[in-house]
Length: 117
Image (cartoon, rainbow, N blue to C red; front, side):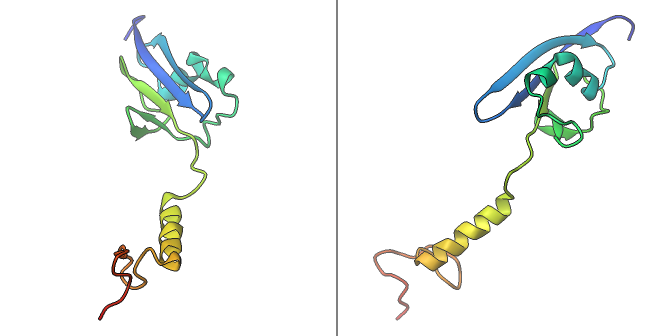
């Protein structure tokens, strides 16, 4: 390990602002140290590493995982809504609006309606 350095990217974004920072860090450091050294926490003070999940190249990792050269460390925002619940509510609304079959949940043919003769 010694004194060699590696390059990593640290990325985070909000709907209004995104940052991708390339930083040189000491070989053998972990994800949390790389995030701190990148300075991204100064740019986005709302990041809380005890709340926000992190990943490397779209693979969820622990803060203690060691980074490798050219890793892309991603800091994820918490979800504001559960995607499954959103789909469930949308499907229920489609049934109520007559756009989906009330039994199967499948789409209703607008030419035939929901009549089963």
